Length: 134
Image 1 (cartoon, one colour):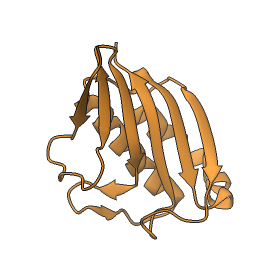
Image 2 (tube, one colour; image 1 turned 30 degrees about the horizontal axis):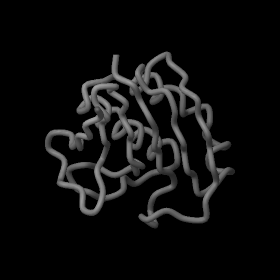
Image 3 (cartoon, one colour; image 1 turned 30 degrees about the vertical axis):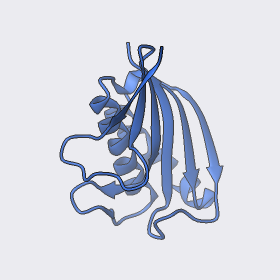
Image 4 (cartoon, helix red, strand yellow; image 1 turned 180 degrees about the horizontal axis):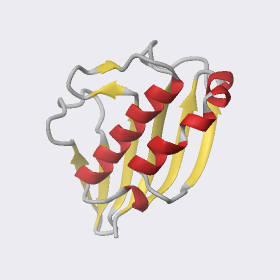
């Protein structure tokens, strides 16, 4: 029988109206809520270009996955919502280093979707996904 547990990384404010992640035990499947490029301390979107925000959003995904007892290499699927395909394409050469730092040499099934806007008007992207803890 499944048991659902909510996840909140240490030091993060309590989410209002959602959970950062849900772990389905005993299968250890982790459902990661969309992570904006916000600073967990200030709860505001980090300034900068797409690559800067990409780094922060991935750091947030990694923190949630780690709080659930898993690692970046346990991520099996990501959906990346972006507000500008042009901004994404213009800085693709700067996206690899944050990826390696937060996810490692692991490439989950990934979908990129351009959207008209996100809940935080300063955010250029949001990343959600699924992981399975080993």
